[in-house]
Length: 280
Image 1 (cartoon, helix red, strand yellow):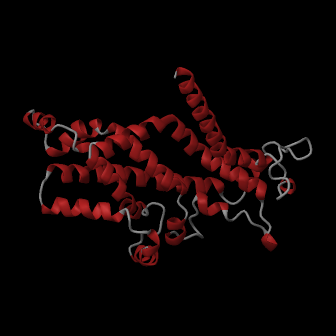
Image 2: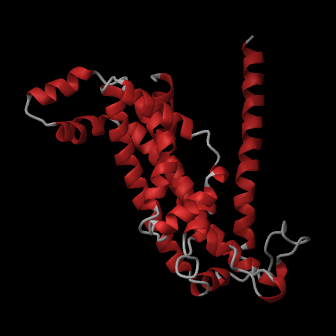
Image 3: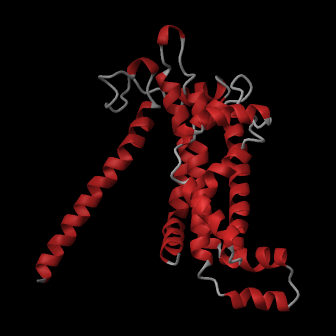
């Protein structure tokens, strides 16, 4: 019996290792090609490791940094991600607190609308949204966070509401007896308790915001503001030639911060999702 269990564990381990290699392989491909000369990246050579002839070190990274405005695009992506993340976390956690603690028709309708928003495809709204953003001057990296708040609110409110139902009401009542007003109760008592869900929502929203291509492409003025996903498509020269080396280097520099953040904080995703899903 024990021998069968060991065999089963070994098979599961091998399958998981194969899956891990399959997931890591695309990133490895981008890495090795970012170290090759541009002329050595073709359909036939894309899977080959760099050799003495094709290896050029960090030249592609220098080209990616010096051309196309990588630093500005990185800055705009960072501003959009940080401002949108903060707005989503604060706004939706407060909204979830209201929905959980105030039992009335308004809170039920609000919760139903937030949940419904998760199933509405972005393609249904994008043309109307683009026109509205122009009229309301939301077409800059500093204002687009308001639009992201609307699109990111559904999932965040759902997760915060599920976790908040497990927080005993007596804790908040004790804080109010000690003299806290509702704002102080939320920021000093409720928000620290929400830490696992806050981190998991922040990670999920950050990955979406940082990699999002379609919304900035539709809303922002691309002559003034380009985010990283938009910039990547401009590594294209005349006659359709694509600068594959700098493009691979740009992609590598773009995905690296997200990969590091995900590896460091992945345990909080599982905790937060389980807390929001099971206790809701």
